Length: 314
Image 1 (cartoon, one colour):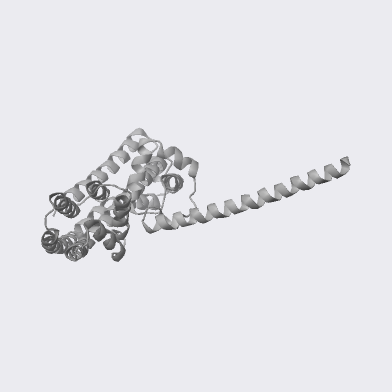
Image 2 (image 1 turned 180 degrees about the horizontal axis):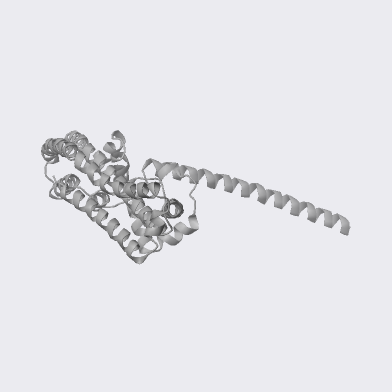
């Protein structure tokens, strides 16, 4: 009798465990399906980049996001449109700095290792600035078409919020991604002023500020948006052509600004190639190290001055 009771109890526990296992698998599968659907939906609105790909260095990324510099880096990466987290960017930058340090130390002299590492950090930050400016320029070139789509949509009787969502579907990146973020913010209850203001902060430019100001004032005053957008479209087209002409005229000056530091580094390599070990002997004294630092500083000043003097704000 006791044996039958034990067998029945064991059978019941086994069946209960199997039932719980089946329920657990079902819950796990449904949770993964809901997560995949959420990632797809957020990817379509531009809130998740890269279709939710697996991120690396998550622990470092979480620590960086808690700091002020990490949050600033996150905003800069968001403005570039790159599918990379602050933790990934930091690790890749440190790897590049280490490689440049070792190459500079082995190819030139031990003194040039730290200098090459600092140049690596500067190059990484300049790459972010270049990517951000490239994205801004591409977005500025799309502004006339954006203004035209908004004008046509509002003329057809659509609300401005609906017109922004329609523009996000019709335009290409980066306008589609940025307008998708604006449409998502509007969908969750954000005001038009705040959503467009964040867009202007992410991609600062005079053209976008003018467009945002026009849309915000028209929305507040309840005025006619179509006429303002029609006039703004013509103005943006003219500014687009003017910016293109100025960029073409200043292309030679831009190349000169980059050629100046390249010539400096090339002269060091040439000197070391003509006389093996010359740089190591030169940097073996305090006077030689000071001369190298001053020379690099002058090259940096020349680069900055050429860039500043050739900058024309339109």
